[in-house]
Image (tube, rainbow, N blue to C red; front, side, top):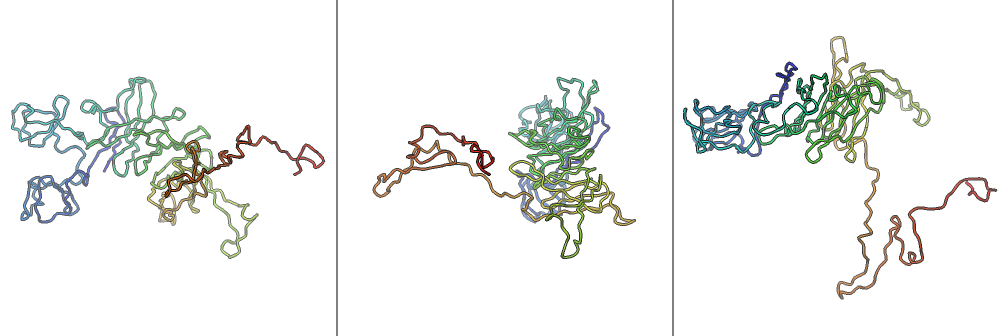
Length: 471
């Protein structure tokens, strides 16, 4: 679980994400639900919906699950390693398993160590796995211990300072990747937003990448909202007030993981193409689609005639339509993955919405939930959540036909008919591929030159004109 704190927006307190751990890791020795049986130190069990770890061996006759000497409740524990004791100081005694920092390296106590004992390698073993020694992000001291990237002033702007962290953040479903916005400012009056990418290594989150806004985008509005796909391989970034096409129209940027690093892969714009639309005010990247709202988008509601009867009035075989345009109501766009690219598929509307349609969003499997805080269904009821659902496995775009990769003719040296019983070649066979220009061999022999297109030119003219073909 991750809890974000806004802080005071200063260098000393820019905000943070506090980490809490619950459950087990694949490397843990999980024994399932607790029962009366023998356990060894390090076993993990569940008891009354909480996780417990065995501190000592127990027999199959000892019911000691609630005895803190034998079992420790590890549910919803702080991300900081519980064995970490800070800098080594021989004025304290250390129990076996305690972790300390000594001369820039972490060590774990091999045995119980009494007060006043000098530091020796026979008592301490260097910790090989990365440990979380603070329990929150960002980490300004990681460079001292793990040589990891941290927020440091840049060469171009040595006075750059982190002043606002985790205003918006998201986490992959497996909690392996975290993305968080970070506002930075400098004494030269420059400011902007960057996205910090953290990846989990062992039991610690390491700052892996710091992504700046594209050059053509105003960095102060970029990353107004971010959303990560559940598998952690892509995420979307909105710039709701982007003016590059129309004033305050907005854009959404898609970042995709390539060789372990996120790169800008695609830029999305609204299908309605309106001014002041604020495309990207909110977004949610689900596993099946990307949902993006335009807070000031116009809803186009179709007008029907006699729709309640069996004989609805249509015009020009449904080519002519009449729509009631409801200004600045809000629009929700759906984008689906087609050949590794997000393409526009449809947009939602709610006929009785007046404003704020799409202010809050949530996508889960084949459901999309849209919140309308200002909607009134009566004088006493305010706000509504609308559930849009589609059949599982169905998409707006379906493959009608697709090209087939042609055979590489350069790899064919010849074709022949072979008799397996007599181990003899019966005859050689010619092969053709008109699409790639491979024609029968006897015809090929009569040609002196071959090109891949038709040289003849055609036009349409009067029958009487001998230089023109009749229509």
